[in-house]
Amino acid sequence: MIPPVYRRWPIALLAIICLLPTGPAAADAAAADAEPRKGYPPLNTEVMVLDLEALADEAAREIAEQQAIRQRYQEAPRGPAVDTPSRPSVPAIALRPAEPIEPPPVTPLSVMLDWTPSPRHAALIVARERGLFASHGLEVALSTPADPDVPIKLLAASRIDLALARQPLLHLGVDRGLPLVRVATLVAMPLSALVVREDSDITAAVDLAGSRIGHADADSRDVLLAALLHEASVRDDEVETEELHFRLGDALREGRVEGVIGAMRHLLPRQLADEGLATRVLTSEALGIPLHDGLILLANRDRLAAQREAIGRLIEALEEASVWIANHPEEAWTLIASAEPGIDTPVNREAWQQIRPRLSLSPAALDQGRYRRFEEYLLEADILGERHPVSRLAVDPGAISR
Image (cartoon, rainbow, N blue to C red; front, side):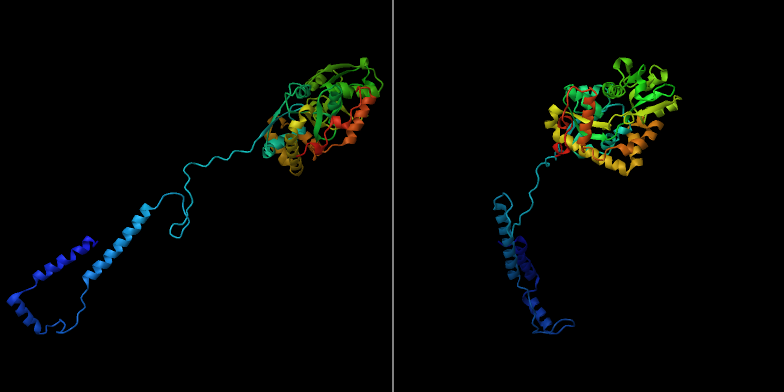
């Protein structure tokens, strides 16, 4: 088929021919042309004339080829892309948004402190604030007890996952049948002491006879005080006791007691000194009580198998926090004070210098000899009813690691 543009060419040629002169006029024109004119080629000069019909045929062939290619493309089947030289494959177009990436699972753990937040809880606070718990897939909730005896009761009843306590309370609880087990150590040295008024006559355990002593919790009365009385051969009925919970300072200041057992040696004396009351500190080791862990993390033995992996990850986070504290002591205190404004007091700032070196750099490490010796000491003091193996009291680090 010849395109319309080319079909008009013959008509144009006829129009030109019709305009040319004919008859006598044509003869005159021919005669005139016989004479050379200025600016025109002479006669018998060969002139090339375009073959308009050939050009029209070539254009028609090109148009026909393009239409054939277009028709073949339109009739080709639709479907997945085929990798061919004429039709290279291309990426498929997404028809809907990609599925969102699900966050990794997070394991919740509830931890109850043994007391109000203080510098000895530094590893827990730093691990939380630096996102170390989160980086180990944990969501750890820290809480403060209403009184110091509450944590192990809630732990034994499976109301919380973990609780902080001192090693003597662990021995006492296990002997009473509670499903407690040590899984980590946060402070590896004793922190409690017997704090007495400066104006009292108490300078040694034997002087406790006839005195009135306050205590903070069960292990202070039933373990530490009982051990001191046994060592000094003082009968229980020769000492009057009073349960004070968190009001140790108030009782000493008001003169209701001559001393308190289980007080934090790095906090209470300085606090009372700032208030004008002088005291004396009799440390537990100076009174003959064996060295023991000052702050440990307890789990419920009946639930330990199910929580083993999560507890292992928590201990790893605590170890990372303890090492960071050792390397950045000043920055660590700034972080702790910012996270827990109630801790930022002159007493705690001074206590931080004493507590920081006592923080355990390897929380999972277990000194089995220490737990065995303390168990024997309490058994000889008639504080325990039977001897319990270390495996019943504390878990080896390898048993809770991933």
